[in-house]
Image (cartoon, rainbow, N blue to C red; front, side, top):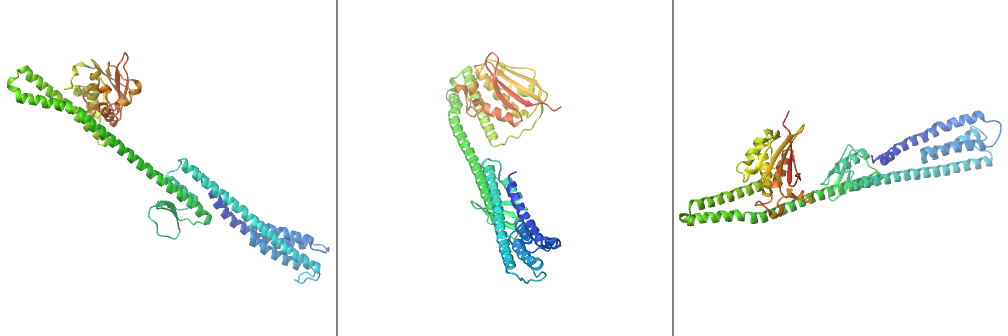
Length: 451
C-alpha cells in the first residue's frame, strides 16, 4: 500500500537508462537519416537556414530524451554533417564563405547551449519528482507508524519490498559488513539490515527513515511489555496486600473459636455435661469447616492466577454434581434441586463452583433453587435466591476478589471470584441477574454434552 511513490521513483531510474539509449539512438540513426532526407530534398537554393534548423531541432530532441552527452555529441556531429553535405564546397570540410563559417559556429554554440539547458531542466525535473516521491514515502511512513498500522515485522516486510531486498531484519548487535547487504543504524542500539539491496544516496536517506521508525516501534513494543509487566506486578502486589488483610481479619475468628473450644474442653472437661460438650464440638466443627472453605478458596484463586487450572472434561449429569456439592454444606436442606441436564464439564471443578454459589446464596436467602435447561449446544444452570439482591451498578464488582456485600459472611470474599474463574476455565461463563420478585440469580452457561 504505502511504498508506491518510492517504487515508482526507482522505476524512473530504470526509465532514465532507456532514455539515454533513446538519445544515443537519435544521434546514431536519426542524424544520418535526417542528412539523407535533406540531401535528397535539397534544390539549387543556397544558404543553410533550413538544414541548420532541422539539425538543431534533432539535436535538442536528443538532449531532451537522452541528456547532456547525447546532446553534445549530437551537436558536434550535426555541425560536421552540415558542413560536409550542405556548405559549399560540399563533400569537404572546407568552408569558402565567411557567412557560412559564422552560421556553423552559431549553430554549434546554439546547439551546445540548448542541449545543456534542456539537460539541466530534465535533471531538475527528475530531482523534483524524486524528492516528491521521497517526501510522499516518508509521509506515508509517518502516518502508518503513528497511526498504529504497522508493527515491527510488518514494517520490516515493507522495507524489504520497498528497496527490493531479499530480506530485512532488525539486529541488536552491530553486524559485520557483508557485500550485497545494506546496514543502516536504527537508533537505541539497533541496526536495520537489508540483504541483497544496493542503496544510492537518496535511497539511503529513505532507508534511514525506515530504520528510525523500526527502532521507534521496537522501543514502543518494549515500553508496552514493560508497562504490562509493571501492571501485573502492581496487580499482584494489590492481591497480596488484600490477601494479607483479609486473612489476618477473617481467619482470626474461626481460629479463636477453635482455640477457645479446645481450651475449654482441656480445662473444664470434667465439669461439662454432654450437651455442653456437643455444643463445643459443633463449634469446633463449624470453625474447621469455615477454615477449610477459606483455604480452599485461597488455593483455587492462586491456581487461577498462575494458570495452573487444567480441566478434565467429559459428559457429566449435573444432578450428581449438585448433590455432591451440597453434601456437608450447612443449610443444604434449604436448597431445592430441579431436573438438571448433562453437560461437558470437569465435575470436580464444577462442584467447587456450585458449592460456592449455593453457599453465597444461603447467606442472604431462606430458600435456594437450582434449575437447569438445555440449549442446542449449551447448558444453563441457575442458582436462584430470594434475598435482597444486588444493585445493577454493583454486580460487576461482586466477582472481584475480596468483595463481600456489606461484610456479610465469614469468608475472605473469594467465593464468587473463584466460581467465575473455574467456570471460565471450563469454557463457560457466570453472570448475575435479577430474580423475578426479588433476589439474585447466578446463571452458569456451560458446554452441552457431546452428541
